Image 1 (cartoon, helix red, strand yellow):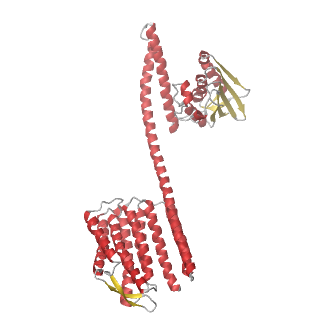
Image 2: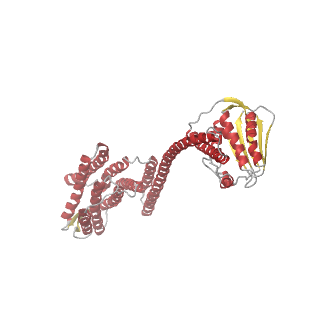
Image 3: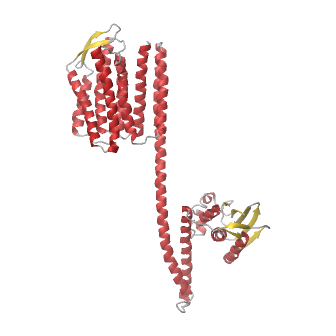
Amino acid sequence: MIEFNLDLLAVGITVAGTGVLGFTILFSEKASITNRTFFAFSIITMLWSIANYLQYQPSDPEAGLWIVRIIIFLGAWHAFSFFQLCYVFPRANVAFPAWYRFAAIPAVILISAATLTPLALKEVTSVSPNGVITSISNGPIMPLFGVIVSLLIISGILLLIRKAYRATPSDRLPIVLIGTGTLITFIFILIFNLILPAAFDNPRFLPLSAVFIFPFIAFTAYAILRHKLFNIKVTAVSTLVFVLAIGVFAEIIFSTDALILLFRSSIFLLVLAAGVLLIRAVIREVEQRELIEKQERELHIINAQQESLLHFISHEVKGYLTKNQAAFASITEGDYGALPQSLKRVAALALADTRKGVETVMSILEASDMKSGSVTYAREEFDLRELAEQVVRDLSESARERNLALTFSAKKGSYVMRGDKEKLQKHVVRNLVDNAIRYTLSGSVKVALERDTGTIRLTVSDTGVGITPEDMAQLFTQGGRGKESTKVNVHSTGYGLFIAKSIVEAHKGRIWAESEGKGKGSRFIVELPA
């Protein structure tokens, strides 16, 4: 009983390993003809292994005859799948020639169908004392079966040799691996399935024929996965499933009761099935992750190209606008002589629009520079209160034109800090106050300073259009403009707050906005280290 069960364990290990490898290869790339052929070869190997083992177990002669017929039926397809694997490897798509579709496949179909009839095996002629079939009379097509199977195997080996000879050094390794697995397998079969039984009358290893096929399975699987850098997570899961299956199968060898044997065999099959589903799920997860990473890399490249193009175009436009600005300034200042009042008014409007254009382009360029990290900052001491007061004075006329009350207040304390005074004044304080004026149709704009221990807080609050939750999500993003804000300021570029945020964060500070909603005003708060 122990000898019987050890044979069963060896076959079980082979079947489990072959199944796990076959499904892993298939799920890694289902569209590949190489992967599909290897999977078919694996399934046929598993069935052939089980049938081959059952052949050498005691059974009814008639049942035993049918088992042998099934073995040679599977043998025909085993040889054919081996030949096809050698033919298609390592390609993903193959257009099969006419002789393959209209001659080779029909021949295998006919000969395999015939193996299930008395044309191949007639009847059992002798049985051993323990009930194992020892002799079967052959039918008329057995020689033809042997020729076809031999031709398929020899042709497959010759295909591998030719591919290895023609392959480049980098592509030769997978073919050599398959050839190595094939050589080891046929050496085992020659020794244990032919030489020992025929020359030494020792059929002891015949039930283990499946084990001798495993080197070819393993080497071929490795060859298929070798150049795809197969994900280590999938390999680990496949190994885990294989080990679990063997652990469950090992219990079968100690089963003496038929019911327990059936129960444990069912558990073994369930473990294999669940393992296959787990492998498929992990492969899908890995593929999705790799797809996302690929898309992110491509998006990064596209963004970099767009940034470069935007930078180039903006520089070009800036050059043209700067020239126009200088020309219109000269005209309005009378450098070309006295002009009619109407023409002077047109030139003044053109100068104002050109200056807005220059400011817009400069905002885009500065945002691009900040995103790329190519901006440098000055480090000097200055008084933020004086800076804020100056901004309020500069923008007071703009507020009066809109009938707004612009006020400034600062609690007692020192507001001296270190940083880039020019960038903070132009892109942070001035930008926030100017925005508050632009987006406030009536009421007031208040600028306030206060200081905590080590922190200076600037707050710019208004009674303007407010910020909706949808618009709040767009603030401080590159080019982000809310729906409500564009209704009030159609010339907004969406870069001002992005630049302000970048500058504040470069000074180790933070900036954020608060609003109770549409029409309820807003507050922009900046905190900087004192």
